[in-house]
Amino acid sequence: MNIQGENKTQNRVRGLLPLWTVIGIFMIGPLLVMAAVSLMESNVYGGVHFKFSLNGYRQILFDTNLFGEIEFNPAYIIIIGRSFILAISATILSLIIGFPAAYFISRQSNKVKNILIFLVTIPFWTNLLIRTFAWIIILGKGGVIESSFNFLGLLGDEDSLNLMYTNSAILIGLVYSYLPLMVLPIYASMEKMDMRLLEAAADLYSSRIGLIRKVILPLSMPGIIGGSILVFVPCLGAFVAPDLLGGGKKLLLGSLIQFQFSYARNWSFGAAVAMFLLSLVILVLFFNAHINKRHREYETHG
Image (cartoon, rainbow, N blue to C red; front, top):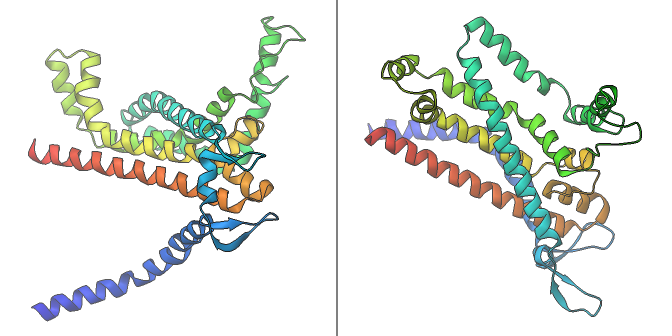
């Protein structure tokens, strides 16, 4: 029996070997390269010198002035704070919009469900860059919104709402881009919900707010947590919406990393910021795993 068990284990390991090879080459390998670059000295013209240096990480908080003295630089802390605020705001807005949408879809017939889910996934069929450019036409000067206000007489011909190149424009682009990632996980949780629980709560004279708070929210919590992570993580590292809708004036972490590699030629600093962003994502995932573990223990032990 022990020999058979060992053979099954060996066969299982051999079967997973191609998978681990692909993960190692295409996922873990680039991360190790990025971590190594972040610990090297940056070259003035791009690339790095193979010399150990922590200047990339130090530059996140400190800078060197004209006299060669190291002083605190809050510029990148502001970018990190702005990234967090916009990512959290986009996640909250996506939840506010996506939760009732997912609930509405889950209460429809199977035929209508398939149609609505199809409509939710349609934006993914178009390139993100093109979809973001569409918001420039909508929010820009003389765009759809301003033209509508001018037509209704709410805005003068020479006036402008100044919607573009603001944090609000970036937030709109982020919510639009990642809203389906909030709707689909919540819908998956709500579809498994036993509707008899809602009927029983209604028979016990539960109010609508009580029904949502005590029945619907707890049962859909795995989908809410999963959707929030799927929205928060890409929003934290987004650079298409900040570049196009923010006009490069409102840098986020993703925009900062892209700028360091493409224009500033400061590879070690760009890699250090990328590793910092990766560590934040890992912390969020660990927090999610801890929440899911407590949720499973609560379901098991009541």
